[in-house]
Image 1 (cartoon, rainbow, N blue to C red):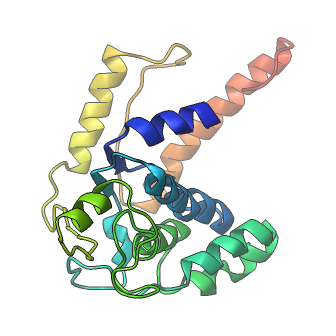
Image 2 (image 1 turned 180 degrees about the vertical axis):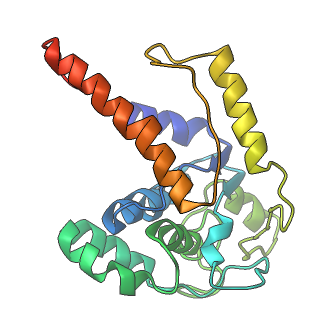
Length: 236
């Protein structure tokens, strides 16, 4: 972001909805931390400079607490220190991080859930309003945005509000609905380089899956690549 664009945001933004993230479950630990944890920290730091900020909404994920049967509307203790983890991602090489990742993110199942859970804790320490407990309850280092109004009005606000929004045990959109929706969309707006009529089916049988993968993915791909090679073109 250029200095001019940053200044435009500082001068004019009133509300931030922060939902940007890498949602890949198989990201390398380095990438997940830099994108989802450090990225959140950077947005929070930018928010601290904004002169007219009224609200900051950070969109987390329900997967942050996969190690719990019941998830309450609160931020749970961290699985690691987010500052230390960001520094590790910035300084250690990817190979080293890949070696320590399984033990470091335990008990969370993947780097996405781990990085997003750490991102929640950024707001306990870098707050647009005063902090909960670090370094002391109610600490703040500026009078920007709502803080000035709160102090002027003698209002004490030192909580980061947490709200859960999830479907629970109800599947609003089932897998077969997604398959049917995708089938209709590919007919209405087909890809420009499509080879044959698109179709999709789902199975829980490994033998059926690998048979279909071989017949409808691998063999056609090898056949098409073979034709392209014979015609002097680059394989797909």
